Length: 62
Image: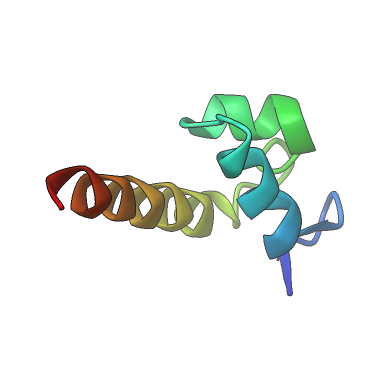
């Protein structure tokens, strides 16, 4: 699914960038280009980053 239509960035590309260490919207932008044109994807990018943080906390707590 496309997350950033302006740059043609998919959810897989965002997940890969997060898996490779991107932990902020700025880092996602540097890795994928997402989020620098119209900004409509910003909320979804934040949500994906938050979900990753929550998953990491659960894994660390286990």
